[in-house]
Amino acid sequence: MKRFYIFVVLTLCLFVNAFSQDDFFKKFADREDITSVYISKSMLRLMPNVQADGIDIGSVASKLDNIQILSCEKQEVVPLIRQELKYINPKNGYEELMKVNDEGEHTVIYLKETSGHSKEYILLCDEKKELTVVILKGSLSLSDIQGIIKQ
Image 1 (cartoon, helix red, strand yellow):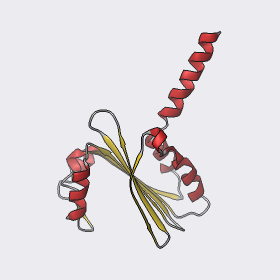
Image 2 (cartoon, rainbow, N blue to C red; image 1 turned 90 degrees about the horizontal axis):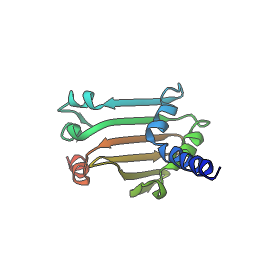
Image 3 (cartoon, rainbow, N blue to C red; image 1 turned 30 degrees about the vertical axis):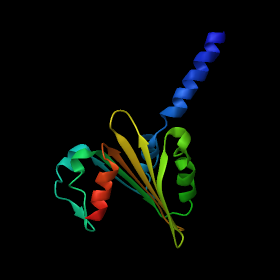
Image 4 (spheres, helix red, strand yellow; image 1 turned 60 degrees about the horizontal axis):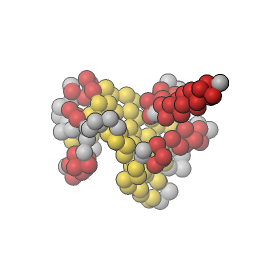
């Protein structure tokens, strides 16, 4: 009986730690009141010279595994997303890299180092009427990100 309780506790711990940004993205991606974008590694390889607003994504596309973006303007849904984002904390391995508060717009960038050289960067942009989450997965370094921003 003692082994059974230990097994149950370990299983619950694994389940709690298994919740990730993939689960978060899947939970909200198909809702009609949320805009979602998923760009796979294969698609990123097809875009070697992509520039968006003067930012050269093509220079690091080969280092990305995927990009996930969720954006919501529905006031009744934004609090639900905020609640689900509580998994992003130091206890779960996320480090806060940068925080900006500008006229009611709160932007935070988090980093989580995963297996091998892979990393997850999460950008949260929380405004009064809109919440945007951008998740970048891959072997990007901080210098890669700085290089994108400087261009």
